[in-house]
Length: 474
Image 1: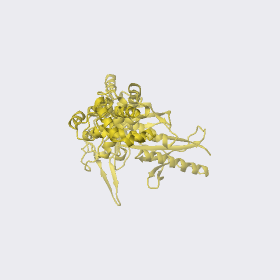
Image 2 (image 1 turned 45 degrees about the horizontal axis):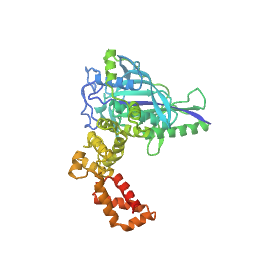
Image 3 (image 1 turned 180 degrees about the vertical axis):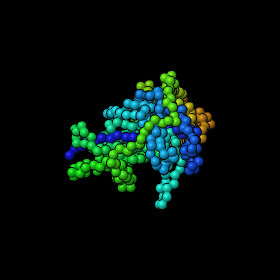
Image 4 (image 1 turned 90 degrees about the horizontal axis):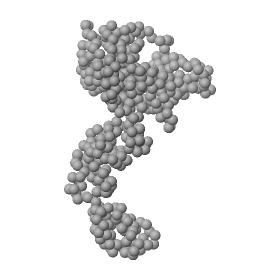
């Protein structure tokens, strides 16, 4: 039987604020266990939460970027459940009044745009981290209270590929906004998948299975594709799908049962009594929106329309937000957008990778790379020379100074080039004969000899043209 696949995602992203959601304690991913905590995080008696203004601001930015309707009245609720990773015995969240509702994010699937609806975004606090050993459990409370946003999609995805594209696009948005670093490998972005199958064309959803805590885009795709296969086989064999929570096993590339679900858990939600509702004035919301950075889609459109870049080149720049910011800075000093893009993406990136550096750590300033690009374009130096100059620029040196000190300026003096060409032709009569006999390699050899005599400074185009002209007369 053929089935329609129904996939929805719940994504938790840690907000990269300096302090926690309801306390003044800091949070650092690699901090020593239980050092980034205070009395509020571990729920000492008499302590009260205080809302992190910066976390609310970042949540508003994300809501606007994903076109959700923002609720100006910020309210929190209490979710009661008694796990060892929750010191209070409850979690402060936004069950009834999320900060944003009814947004969307579009993905590009083989050139076809598809909108994925977003049901809601709400703020909450993270739990402590547990380490299960053979006969005991250790708890690190550093993560307890870290501000989170939960982004809940509608069940609009139909494959692992669509889900992967959605998460990748969302991750990019979080990064460009500087709302979250979204490092899935560090747990600052975590994904739960809800997936069900139904007979093709049916309007009745099948039984939903949840796959918890997927920590990479590849795992999300693989887990969904495996689960589609597993559920299809169960249904084809006349079985029924159990409502359950599963996890993805990377070693076997399969999903494994964690626990069965008999029904919805009653968390006994009620309004959080220790946090009064906070009304955000419209002027403040508009001020937050106005100060937001340019988003990837807007950048891509601008790169294509304003700079004439291809869709491919624009997307290459957008893969890394710091690469895109570097390119924007380059364009303050140069008008050669295509050349700047090529030298940045291909030449500088390749050189940095070879030397164990990144665009974030390089000493090559955008202004300096723009200078180098313009020196190639105005034929001050050749492209080959520029690659040598770029190596010296890794130490932070100015390209114009390097060219001057090494005497690398390209020579376009016709009389000087003509003299060198005559010398080379006189010294290589056999190459002239080879050229006359149709051996094209002879031309390259002769041009190379002229370049060698000029120590690489002769203008290559002028040299090639002049060698051809001289050969035609001999």
